[in-house]
Each structure stands twice: as C-alpha cells, then as structure tokens.
Amino acid sequence: MYSSFTYPGATKDATWTWSALYALTVNELAPNSPTRKSGNGCNHCHNPHKVRRDSATSELVGFRIIRKSLIHAISNKGINPYEPGSPTIFDGDTPLTQAESVALCAQCHVEYVCGNSPIDKIDRDYFSWAKAADLEDVYATAFPGYGVYDYKYIQDWIHGTGGLSSPNSPANGVPYLTPFPIQEELIKSQHPEAETYWNSRHYDNDAACFICHMPKVTKVSDGTTYTSHWLASPLKYMAPEPVGAFAQTFGLELTKEGIVSPCGECHGGKLSRMKTKAENIQDGIYADALAVEAALVESLEAIKAAKDAQASGQPVDTALLESAVEDHRAAHVRWENLVVSENSMGFHNPSEVGGELRNALTLAQSAKQKAEDAVSAPAVDCSGFNDQQSCEAAGCRWSSNKETCR
Image 1 (cartoon, rainbow, N blue to C red):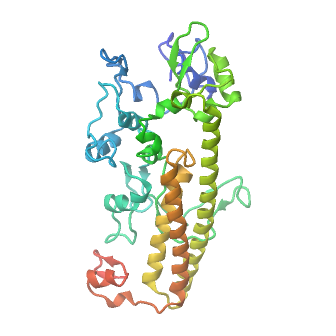
Image 2 (tube, rainbow, N blue to C red):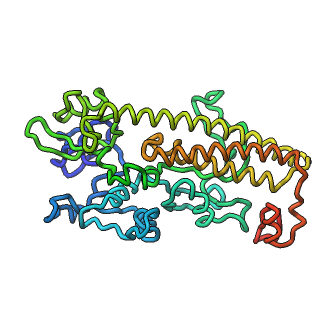
Image 3 (cartoon, rainbow, N blue to C red):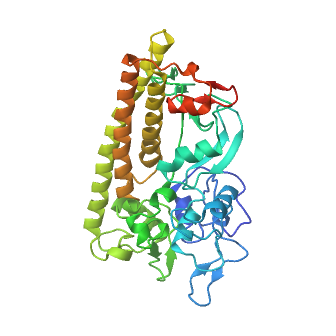
C-alpha cells in the first residue's frame, strides 16, 4: 500500500495506523505518512486498466476478481449457488449487480480451505462456496477420507491434537489442551460473511455490502462526495467516538448527531431504532450461541467418555457412537461457521443463523444422548459384516481400501 500517490511507492514498511485505512477514503495521505503491511490493495477489486464511469448510468465499472479459487467456484456453481440460474461469469465491465457486488467482497469475506491438511499434508486453496448446513457434504465430496484414511474428510483439523501456547492458559507458556479430545476431524471455518448474507432479508432487498460498510462521505472543504474505504461495521460509523476521529482526520461532514449514517441510505430518519434493533439481534444470537457452546462441551465429554470406555474393553455400540460423532460434527460446524467465524453475530442473516443455532443445539444434545446410550446399549459387532451395504445399514463404517467394516 502506498503512503502517497506523490511518491512512486513506500520505501519501507511502517506500523499499522488507522490513518492508513482512512487514506483510502480520500485517495491519499500527505507525503511520508505512515503505511501498513497489507495483504490487499486497490487492484484486488479495481482493474487499473478498465476503471471508468459507465456511459449510460455513470456508475463506476472496471471491477474484477483475482482470487482464482473464487473464479473457479463461480464458474462451477454460480455467483450465488442458492439462486436458480445464477450467472457463472463475473462481469466487471458493466455496472455490478447486487450478487456481483457481494461476490467482489467474497474474495476475502468467505469460507475457504487453505494451507496444509493435518492428515495428508497437502496444501490446498479451495472455496466451498456453500452455506454452513451444506459444508460437511461439500468437504466429504471434495476431500474424501473414508477408504484411505479413517476420517470423513481430510481437511481442516482433528479435534484434540496439538496444543496452543497462550498467555491465558492455566500455566503461562504451557500448551493448553482440550479436556475432552475426541480425535475426530472437524471443519474450521474462516469468515463466511458472503455465504451467510446470501438470501437474507437485506440481500433479497438488493442491499449490497458497500451500502452499509462503505457509505458515502462528504468533504467539508469542497463538498466532494467519496465512497468510504474505511471498511468497518456500520455500528462504528454510527458511534460518535470512532467516526469522529475518522471525520476529523479527513475533514468530513457528520450528521447533527455527530455520526455517518449508513442505515440512512434506506431507512431515512429511523436510525436510532435501526441501531437498537441491530444490537438486539446480536444480543439474542449471542445468547443462543452460548447455549450451543455449552451443549457442545457436554457432547464432547460424553463422546470422550464413550471412547475411553471402548478403549478399556467395555462393550460399546460402535454404530451409535459414530452417530453421536456425526451429530456433534453437524452441530459444531453450524456454531463454528455462523457465530465464531462469521463477523456479524447473526445480523447478516438473523433468520438463518437463529434457525441453524436451534438445529445445532438439538444436534449437540442428541450427540450427548447417543454417546451415553452407546456405553449402555448392546454393542453392534461391525466386524461381522462383509459387504458395504450391510455394513452401512447397521450404522457401521465401510473402508473400501481395506474391504473391512468397522
């Protein structure tokens, strides 16, 4: 990122400052202003060879997507795979559709696979391009594990392996390990804002990401209007302290309440009510998430206890225990994806997030019950099945590679 267009480029990396973010709002900082190390820049979204105003609409065109995995996902599934007939080409040379504007942001704000698998050690770059409820099926298809490894899928991580040194761990500097490691593969989501936002109430009303997160701002000195590139929560734009510092840095106009009002683009004078409603939605989703979190810990404890009993020679219903693990996975991915990794605490799609958290709670409770029942139930001897059909019908797992049932 350049510190100023006056110079050909920054001569050295400098410390992150808020000013470096604000700079994008009004094109430049003064010469020698500090810059920051950054993985993104103007050219990630704007094609420097094609930026112009559309002759018919005067809208800015010349946008582009440069993430190859996203291009591949769009070509295979569409710009929004949950809309029938969704285009499979991103056309940045014409004014962006609402779906295209969301896809532009999805270059970063999306769930993806990257880095080495903990199982087969392969370094992958892959966009699932799917909602939380569908991720397990997507990953089991894209990265199948059964038949070669004793795992459903071979990406992202295995619960209970490894350790993380943390200053907040029980003993400073000592790796903190989970108390109930179940040694099962789980999905570690990144930041699926785009997928969560698809088909939400705001999405269906044609609200693009930039309306809320990149509102129009006006210079006091000359009345020129810019699209803000301070990529922040609209709640920060509506909070006097952070937006006040932002406005002071660049001499921007504020409303009589001392804020910038992204919600005002659509909601007129109902700003106070809109902000309260957003915060109430987030509070409710957070409460639901805590309930799921507690249930997940209980299911982990029950699954770990069942596995320990099995390891000690006690009779355990293997099929019922495997079903408990499947329910835990399904609960975990919903909680992990929609509230731990997604950054709106439900506001991007309250109905979907709330509904999936209710599903997650039911699944986590089911996982706990099944794991407890597996220890007391008559065990199913999976080794007695010699073909895949009868093996899976009994709730066991068939290994194609080893031609065995387990």
